[in-house]
Image (cartoon, rainbow, N blue to C red; front, side, top):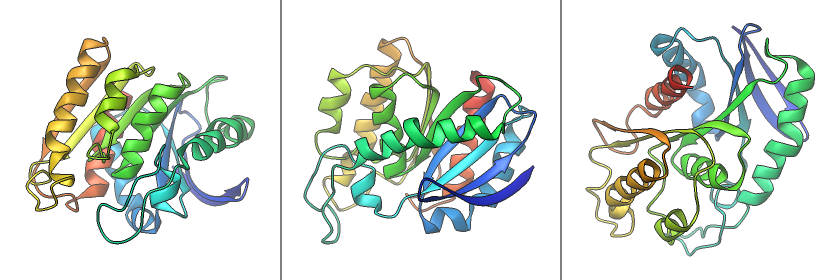
Length: 228
């Protein structure tokens, strides 16, 4: 698999290209994610034999660019923004057309999968309710504790046909009362997806939010590749 780092419409993108792939994984990442991205790709390959290409695009302001509506700070002092719509427009209007033009897939119309970890997982879930261009969504330890998220999920239908969900078994055992809601919120998310007829799974991992993020994310993408 060929690796390269290029800029697409002002954003740094790390590409892992298999010319035989008919599915392209899109993943919002920060600097920490990029440090372990090689390990993540290796994990995907460990759990599936399906060929794929992966494109990790850099997010500069994690708490602004990945949330669809503003909210006060839940941890620390940095509030959340409402930049998710702009990020999604970048993906659909710039990134995906550029990747099609680069011919990094064996298919004329490759399938696109979207996913990520933490707030990037929440962004992927939200994007899946806004557009049907993604065949699958991987929401790994997603921040579904986010204020008003469950209300939103109950009122908006998932447009992607397959959704992978996972969470660490210690993530809901935290002192922060807002973030402690993550377990019940993800169980509710899973129930909603099942009722909507979505192909979905909820997997539980050992550890807290910071345990093996690369391996968890890799398994999530592999599940999508194996189930679409």
